[in-house]
Amino acid sequence: MAAQLTQSDRVLEQCDVVVIGGGPSGSTAAALLARRGYRVIALEKARHPRFHIGESLLPMNLPIFERLGVLDKVRALGVFKPGADFEADNARGYNTYAFARAIGNSPPHAYQVWRQDFDKMLYNHARDCGADAREGQEVVKVEQQGSRQTRLDVNADDGARYTIQARYVVDASGRDALLSTKKKLRRKNAEHQSAAIFGHFRGADQRAGADAGNISIYRFDHGWMWMIPLPGGVMSVGAVCRPDYLKQRKGRTLEFLLDALKLNPALWQRMSRAELIGSEVRVTGNYSYDSTQMGGPGWVLVGDAFAFLDPVFSSGVYLAMSGAEQAAHVVDSALREPAGEMALLRKLEKRQRAGMARFSFFIYRFNGPVMQQMFREPRNIWQLEQGVISMLAGDLFDSRKVLLRLRLFKLVYAFCGVLDWRRWRAEHRYRLAQARAQFTGGNTPLDKV
Image (cartoon, rainbow, N blue to C red):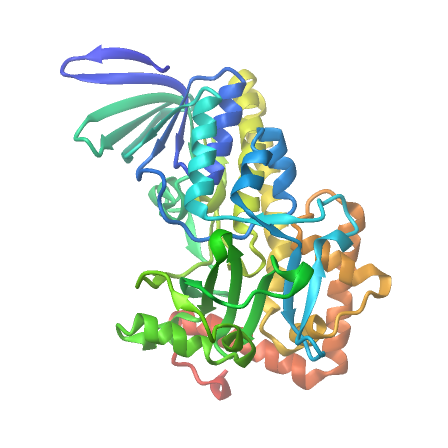
């Protein structure tokens, strides 16, 4: 437990590390730092279980689960996910990118989970590891008085008010991006803005046989769509689209989602017997952003508090937990040997940005005609298809074999663009229009770009 000091009419608590946020990144950092013997207070402003999108995990999550000691718990919560499938012009209507075909060291499968159950399990595990994990606690003020002295004012949902003094702050506050916003570090990604509308359905058709647990990805003119099998025969179904398209819903949330899903006949065919669970369809705002800096003396941003990408390749939870695991090492080293802190933070930021950039290359071009053709008709020349599978598995940090294939893929992509100039030019215009729409409210005609 954190030490307590009485000051006049309130309690000032002291600890080594405060972790703001009880999602996957916060729980990971809190558990690992508590295991190393630090006094850790973890603060989650809501109470578990609380809703969160992002149900599809990646194979490279599994080694992290194993190091945390929660792999069996995830297995019990999840639906087995053997791969991802994308539309194709073949008899089945899709191509499966099976994780078992990856060329790196990634596991051959992943899981898909109810995030409220998954997040609650991870937070409870952090508590079991020794973190003082509190719920219903909102950080309302952060004041750094020195590199090893930060004061945080906390409002509890039971009316309590108190202050914590910490030697280090790990901001895992998700899309609230508490420190990034306070320090004016947060910036929108003008090149790729999107928003999402989604719901949970019962009765949607799963893929047949070994593909039953696949996440399925579909394109449509305004973005892309997903179908994610979840426990209990539930299917998460949604669309990520440009904000200007989503603005057309005008309060017709359910009708708008269904109308959007109808724009892809293959997806809609799988929804013929589906029924919405309850009556709730959810909408999220703009997705893509990052922070100009990941950390400084006495603080670090992890997970969505640092950056968030379009979720087409389900990268969110993996990037969050991987970054948090690395950040826990940085915090531990900084508290023991402060002189090396900034070098470690720079190395961590470089690593995270490199992984994000490798995902982003595919994300930014995913709906363009060149990339669409390459996904519809994959070829494994020089093991390029398997390199893409490794990317989809999350293996994009340390495997030279995978990184070489991804670099080769970029060259092949460029070569295909040169061979088909019109298709490449259409994709380039699409990306420019998407970026300009961010600043013009989405009203820029393509012929004016």
